[in-house]
Image 1 (tube, rainbow, N blue to C red):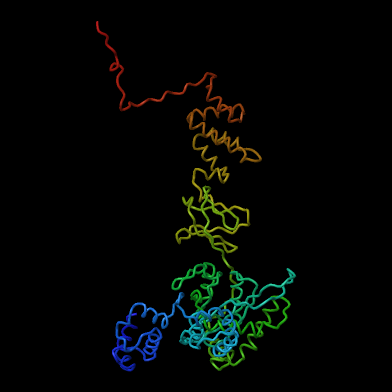
Image 2: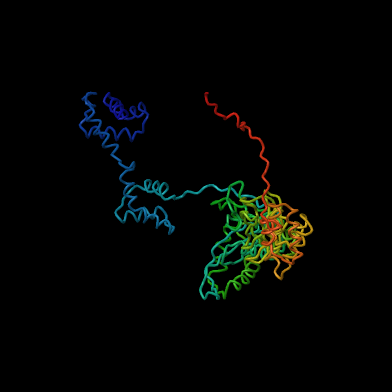
Amino acid sequence: MIEIKEVLRLWLAGHSLREVTRLAGLDRKTVRRYVQAAQAAGVAREGGDGQLTDEVLGAVVAVVRPDRPRGNGASWEAIAVQREQIQTWLKHDLTLAKIHMLLGRRGVVVPYRTLHRFAVAELGFGRRQPTVPVTDGKPGQEVQVDFGRLGLVPDPPTARQRVAQGLIFTAVYSRHMFVYPTLRQTLEDVVAGFEAAWVFFGGVFAVVVPDNMKAIVDQADAVDPRLNDAFREYAQSRGFAVDPARVRHPRDKPRVERCVQYARSNFFVGEDFRDIDDCRQRAVVWCAEVAGTRIHGTTQRRPGEVFEAEECPVLLPLPTDGFVIPSYTRPKVAPDRHVEVARSLYSVPGDLVGQRILARADGTTVKLYWRGQLIKVHSHQQPGRRRTDPADLPSEVTAYAMRDLDALNRRAAAHGDHIAAYAAALLEHPLPWTKMRQVYRLLGLVRRHGADAVDDACARALEAEAVNVGLIDRMLTRGLDGRPVTAPVPLSTASRFVRDSKDFTVRRPS
């Protein structure tokens, strides 16, 4: 209102439109619209400044600045109704000029500039971020890896078709590529794809830039991603470094991104495969004879020839041994000092009950780690079996847990010769571990009645050839001569608050 009032005041003062434009600092078309709207509202040039009332200024504002409830004009609102149709036309590569013409045929007559602003702001038309080409690096240094959907292939075991995924490798320097079709994206399939790629290339690249596939990356991060322990071990065994791309950043691996569409359209589409194995065999031939011999659009060279001449000689040597994929788990140490790994039990040294440790199993050995230190190595056991090292258990329970008869005999011999002989007689059985509880009862009698009394009772029982620990218990309880044995009264030590009985004597008055 202040701007409009100033323009009209200058015009009523007798200034021309050119002078009003210069003094108000506005565009001449804007000044002309203000003046025309004021004249339509009844303002005369010879009437003076008194005509510029609030009602007149409100009428001028209503004409030059119509009400916009949503912040946009009528043309913008008319285009917004046709949003889905405009978006469909843009997907079919129609130009914006053609869309402006088609809207006019539908009765939506709007300025082209408004249509362009709507398409840019609401539909992302014409927006393209600037890109900077990244250098290819040295030959044999980097290979980029990505998964891409290829299509459906027959699966004879299930008598149906399944989706085939392509694990695609692209050498950054030469653009030579390799495709490994697979039905799953597990760690086993990824490692198998890497092994097939090294055979195809004839060596190993120094750096691998994969996508954030779950088989490789456990936790994605822009600067410090956490890799899968098993895949990290595989990378160490083959000698390459892993540098995962960031999440939703395809520009971190642009060399392989375009190869996904190329492999799907040029290799897979239109072909008939018997099964996934047939697809893999034909993929090797296609990579060598078609993809490797084409003229690359960027380098204008044949990728296969560049790879053989410059990259293949500098690759790391091809691995000669296979790789057994280990499994890493974090089991909890049970109260019996064992952990469960692959449905088998293994003993754990030390007092780690209730703690979670790291376990590595590779089919031949099971290694247990605690805070980065290797604490135990066991041979692999079949599911449902147990592997216990007696040294891992406490000394007081080792003999019982391991059914160690020799250790039990040594404990009995430590209390007397007759006790040792009596324990040996108790264990003289086809199933000696079924008599271990009787020996433990005999050792308990030693703690209750003393070693000498138990040794004497065992000697008399052996003379009578009476091998029964219950007999020894009755002999000690009733006495060796048939009279009950009174247990010695333990000497009580003086307590802190003990008083003489005289201190509590009541003296009556005479």
